[in-house]
Image 1 (tube, rainbow, N blue to C red):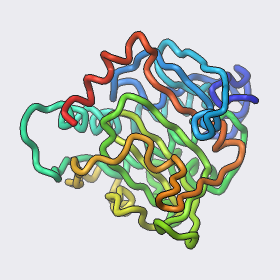
Image 2: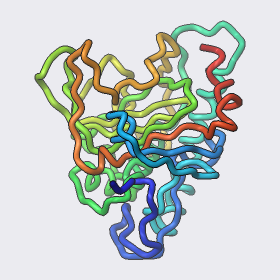
Image 3: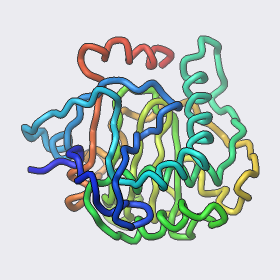
Image 4: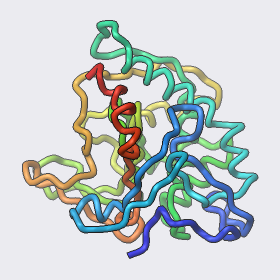
Length: 276
């Protein structure tokens, strides 16, 4: 079996601009929003099926050599600061010793935040593909004036856990306990917040970031941040007989990444969860 955590050739097709170039590393999440630590990584197939597979160690977080220097610098200059500020702020809320309400509001720039999330999801795939999501998200992220395509919906929730999941191009049924309304999803979860992109306009009552798709690039908005109840660690990507939840996916889904802090640093990392 091959793994999405393997390196692509140093010179190849950039996932964002689609030009052949020398590739650079894209950290998911980007540096500056959370603590970057040594991680043990497995393919998602290994995680979902309990299949025996190899574990790969990365000394400085989860990263993908999939985008060129120009695109990497574009993300850093245009969008990463917004994503990092949002992540740092949510992290402070989760680690606070104060008694906080169930729902807070936080001021952010939704358009820049959306572009950052989608760009890093596009980068988080070793396979050179051109799926509908890749096409739409790529065009949206590279053009600061572009608005989020109508067929992409983005949801978010707090994620007070120390592991990380980046899962691409998988399908689930939208309605719990039902085999109706299948939709395609993209997932990025890491402390302190998770993002789920979907072709469905709503999912499981999650707050919608795409509700602000018509905001100007630098327009600031107060968005709700629901601190309680906390979703389960392996939700929603794990099949569940209780709700007839079935996960479908091809190579890019099964070769997606599950990562956890190395055993030597895991106890320290899990201090992030104490508030919960």
